Length: 375
Image (cartoon, rainbow, N blue to C red):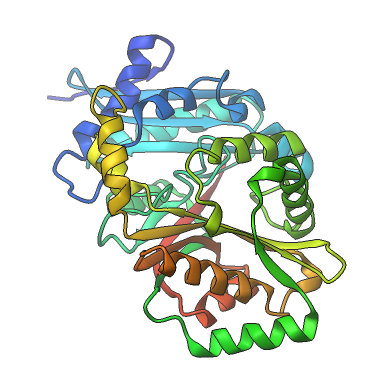
């Protein structure tokens, strides 16, 4: 008996609910999986709340087999990125499937056909569905333990699905783990020497002067985002402002730092957050009716942090600025009672920041792969 796989474009509210709900069934026996907040995922599927979906055509698909939904995928085109990079690329995102290659193949076919119809020449992914750091890259190494905040998580067999279909590695992004009880003494001494030699300072963010800090962050991101990176462009001021205001409710100001040159120019920044995944895991995707109370209670028990962003302008590479940002962030996290920290993710070709992470005591423990596929 041949069972056909049906591919359904997501268009109705019911289909969106099915798309959002599918991982709860696929990961029900996986103790490491962290359920996303359902409200956030619904917003991700809505162009009114997700600017990426307004940058070009997009579509989400469900796969149904024997009357049951067994997989999903999203795809689209980021015309802003394509214009900046002079490319004609599409992306895939939010892929999930049962352990059945025929299901994965049907989903990849649907996404490829959609992108081909919109003139795309090559596909990359998995990419973030919101142009952020969430769901970016396929986890291919480091399946032990739950993911850190915003980091990807998936079954190990997804790698086989991608590569059997013909996806090839474009590049990897690495996650590092820091033991806060083992801040290297050489890092502390090296930062002291670097700050005296190159006359830069590191300070905590000042939320009382938020607009000034937003302009500083914009300056740093503009200067520190390399043009040759294939998947990133510097965000607009509006995007920076929106991202900062989104982080305000969950940020700990003592864990956010700005580095400044002697003349006051912003030359580096780091943003570290508590690993809220430790709380989100207990909420099962819901804030109401009891999720909010769980958040308020369990957030006091979070014992790890996530380094969300670290950037340094090119003129201050190899001058100890990134090492200083690591040092100040780790010391502040340790003072607040955290015992460990995740720094994810660092592009494997970002050699300077990669080496700085190692030199600051980090251990590469997870690998996330971005694939490409020529249409």
